[in-house]
Image (spheres, rainbow, N blue to C red):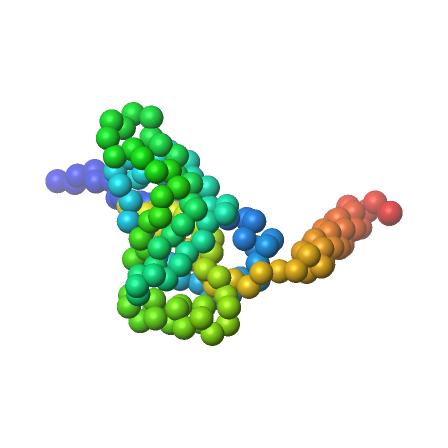
Length: 165
């Protein structure tokens, strides 16, 4: 007797929020995936796809990493524990990782920025990266480079289509 069984597809990692401004404002270096401690309504708000990482940063305090300035709006159907949309939240990393991050931040003057907020196996995760601030001319140079590569790609596509420019 053959039974029809549905095979559960692996859940895609839905990205809740990306910090695109981080790549524009900082030179991003080494990154880590960290768990994030949330309250119930915050998880529901994230599942609804509502969050902003812009302006967020992390700090090491008493050998723990805390995420500051990340906006998770209030969930409208929640009745309690629905406070502090920009409260500080604890990040979950191994002790050795925290010590390594702390050493690099103190030695090199780097900053810890959140890059992506997503779900993995049903749990909220945040990708944090060590970052060094860009100067204004670095930002202009990056924009000019991006525009030059776009223009080169446009020219190649026009040439492939047989349109002379």
